Length: 145
Image (cartoon, rainbow, N blue to C red; front, side, top):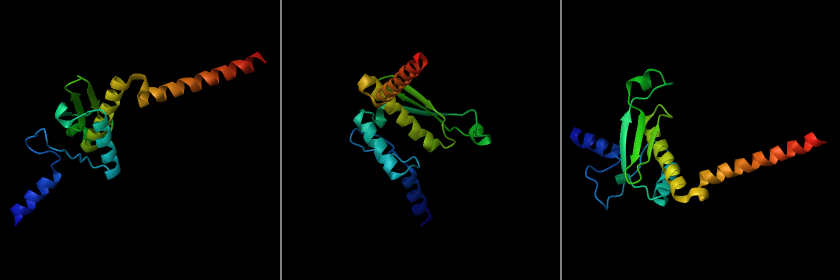
């Protein structure tokens, strides 16, 4: 009875099977809401980011967080093997949330690389640049009066 209970607990907490095959479907479980999990999986699918293509390592964090980050390896380092892009995230004190943030940031990098000026990040920067130009022209017009 105890072995069954422990085996059941272990299987619930594992996110990946022991031996990944090409047909395996991975479940992302980082302690985030179901909606965020689905959005991340969809975004990873849209930019062709597969879990098999990611090399994930955990290192000790530094900075704010006190003893928690000094004694545990909560910083996540992801490397996308096909493109060579690497991401290091220590945004949270939780390793699970850092894994989520790292995958999200990796998706952003891949979108920027694949889409160029059509990526969401590039569009956001372009919008900010245009706003600053409008403000600058407005203040120049006031100075002349």
